[in-house]
Image (cartoon, rainbow, N blue to C red; front, side):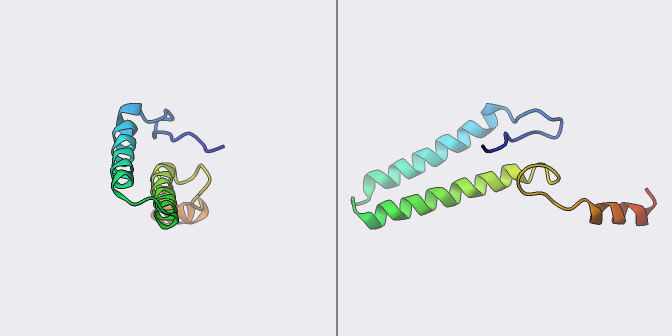
Length: 87
């Protein structure tokens, strides 16, 4: 189960920010698919490219909250830096 992307105030991003990106990517893949020959190389390439685009979108959404989610930044270096700054 993939965690829902969150905004800094704890809410999920509104659909109007994500839907145009999804529609554009879908349109690009469909237009390439209609013009490409039907063979295993093309299908494999589409699968790899769609996985890469999906992974990139996931990483962008995951970077919105660096201390939560599947990929987490360590809190300790930030605490050390803030202590040295006197905060």
